[in-house]
Length: 191
Image 1: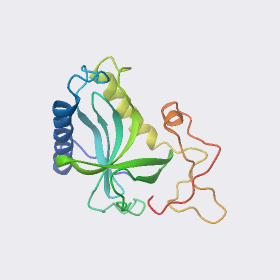
Image 2: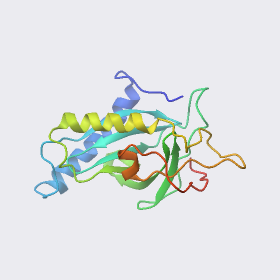
Image 3: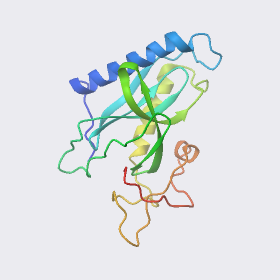
Image 4: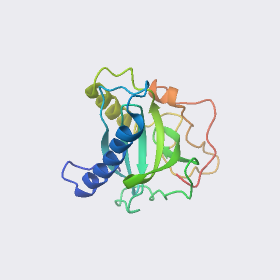
């Protein structure tokens, strides 16, 4: 079970504010005037909620939209799968996580007051979005799709002997609604 936050979750609000502030600073200091920035968009962390002891949401910026995993308290509810461990990765390394839709790779990064994060790119650049509301609706749809099980993905965290591991899902397939892949992922201890 995924513990979705409410607008009144103070921890989620504080985490979202830190991440948004860090990437608003990036926008002001490093992105101003660059040709791949969609000036009609703003920085927003959409749908931030607890997932297996970590924080999960979609970060919209005028230059990218990424699934974001952020360190959490490691706790989870009784119905949750075991908590996901924050991987021992350095900036630029990848970590894989299994979701009902399949296994996705996340790139490790660090940004100011946001601290460490893992990002899975969904869109870049962002010119296909006419306005911020369209980007926000897409972010919400991507989060929802992440938790839709597929025929090729198994719900278990660790595949049992003789059972296929969750399928590796490419970004293109994920965004196009194609949830299966011809090859299965190798089990990862970081799921």
